[in-house]
Image (cartoon, rainbow, N blue to C red; front, side, top):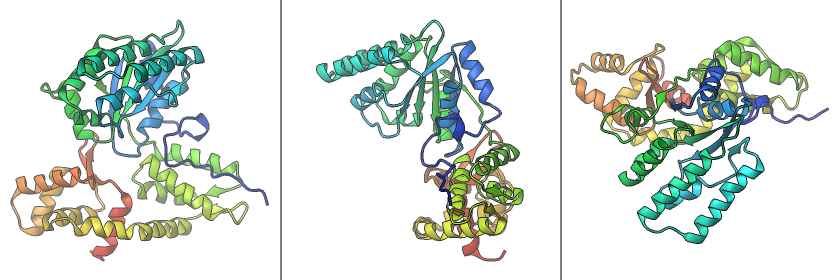
Length: 370
């Protein structure tokens, strides 16, 4: 019996066409970057596919090259300089241009700038070098992931980064992040340093029918298949989140390794979902036990409903069920749950959802029939 590699990639951003499920917004971002020097920020929930989306716009273009940097692990100005000189995440940059960055990195190691002024000057050199990678046919794009972490830096660092980017308009920039509130604050609040520095680029869920086609094509190549109703259950359970869907499909493929030509069914999906919930139960119990009574009450109200809820709707429902009228208190509780990364309020419609769809399923199961 032939063996096949798992066709569904998980755990990191996708950076090749074969593993990427196309999105309706792909062409719009690519054309915007190609036709004009534009700066965007993408602030959507975790695992929706922001990084893969931004990278693929560059990979699929004949007129773009890119630098990708994840600001998540960085906590110092020196660390930021070193990060922006890494070459392992460059996209479509030819060796000669990569050498410019490598030379600058050696210069950083040799000079070891110590004062803020020296570091700010070096940051300017890095950004100018990136912009200078422009060729007659290709323009450079800088992707800064988890950009909300810039708020952890001193104001002088944020000012320096903003000013250098402002004075380098030929460099396109995409700011990504999963903390929607912080990114919206950064770019839309007139009191913030990055106010008005980028336009928001709206990223929606990949339509279910498109994702189903993608999954069917991947499975057909390895003599597997999936029932449409089984995929619909996966899509609805995962709330349309690309990373969660790919992860569940990956787990289901592993269940089919022993039988060539196996078809993924609703029964198999339900069994795999239950296994996933069982694996995460201890983690969920710990998180839930550390919440206050009001926080648990809000989560319970959110878990029980089968309808979409906004912050206002959730507050009204909670008040009615608990005979409370302390709207401001409940809204504050919702805000604290968002800060704890348990729920998120996202998209223009203001929907409230659990970060983990399995947390919601676990909680519904724990609460029992309702």
